[in-house]
Image (tube, rainbow, N blue to C red; front, side, top):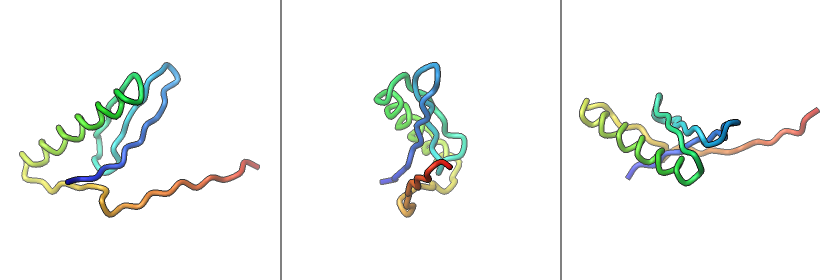
Length: 74
């Protein structure tokens, strides 16, 4: 089992662009959060499939911690 963090960026014109930091170039889009997450899963699966076919190592985020830090504006 692989673990991946995804970043969802809400677009001004609507929808969400999704990136997968552990998989460079793995980017997709969904018109709403549910579609964006579904598209992310599909993009990740296809990316991993390609890595396997090439015999390349498969990175994941299982040992990555993520925190958000909020700073007050000055």
